[in-house]
Amino acid sequence: MNSIKVCGMRDADNIRAVEEQAKPDMMGFICWEHSPRYVSEVPAYLPECKRVGVFVNPTLDEIQKHIEAFDFSYIQLHGSESPEFCQEVREKTGCKVIKAISVDRKEDLALASQYEGFVDLLLFDTKCKTVGGSGQQFSWDILSDYQGSLPFLLSGGIGPDDAERLSKFHHLKCLGFDINSRFEIEPGLKDTDKIRTFISTIRQHESN
Image (cartoon, rainbow, N blue to C red):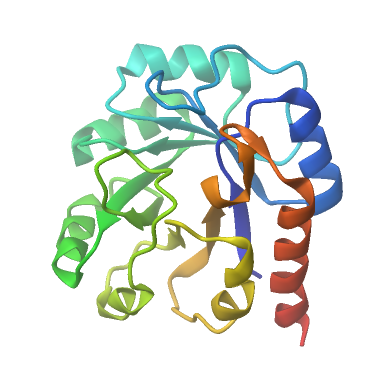
């Protein structure tokens, strides 16, 4: 079964509504202050599903402070973090580590091999001027050239109308999909109905 991660959550009522109505497997909280979805304080309600802290070139101390506040299960590193730093995060926090890899051509996949043995999971996102959340897609066909051993989440501009096409996307290492900006009413506030319909469609195809 594909895991669905809803990223960029911030509002307590929105978090509760998405969790109760759409039942995602993971929710991501962006802990990078330059993001329009930056979660500047701990929401009054946190979900029971796996929580992912998203960081860009953080210090270990910064990560640990957020883990204490949010009780993260995963740390997603979205900057130019080295494999060694990723391993240090994994060893010293006890959290699983997701490393984001920006992609717009098959040659970009070469970077993924550097993280073999240092992280638990990759996230393939669209290469863009911003750090994620661009709403833009890369060609998923590129991932047919990914031969690594690390499992991954597919991200980058996935929208409500992509559920049918995603149901036909198959890669032995793909664990699921990460959704964010194209399901928003405004940055950090998700359209619960769109997420519920999207996840329901994905799950329905899996059961057929």
